[in-house]
Length: 181
Image (cartoon, rainbow, N blue to C red):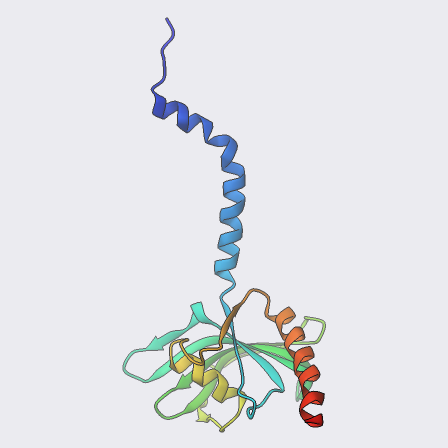
């Protein structure tokens, strides 16, 4: 005697052939969610020597202190030099005191133009310094102190390194037009 399965069980048996494409879509959605970098644009009169990206999912407001921490990725237009050598970008854990307008860095890694790590550091107690007007730190502070709501032109970006290349090309295209005007 054969037993007949209820209709609900039959429909559940038909799903496995759809499960692989569905699993692939879910994996891609998970990757997109993991890449939570936001481009924070500079005003025309601010420093444009680097493109600034903030990982919004890493932002953490420290209660009762007026401080915010987040991972920041600064990608520079040209190589920068320091005691440890030349670097083109840096992923840094930044702490901002929004009330006192000060910034410090907990830890970070600097990368060469080819993507290799050049230098790493860790500061358990970051030294806080005043944020200079129109600086890269002021760009980060605008975004982080507003919990990612300002400036309104901030955009989510999947691949900051490719995005920065395109932005630098656009800056270079716009620059001659401004000189001619």
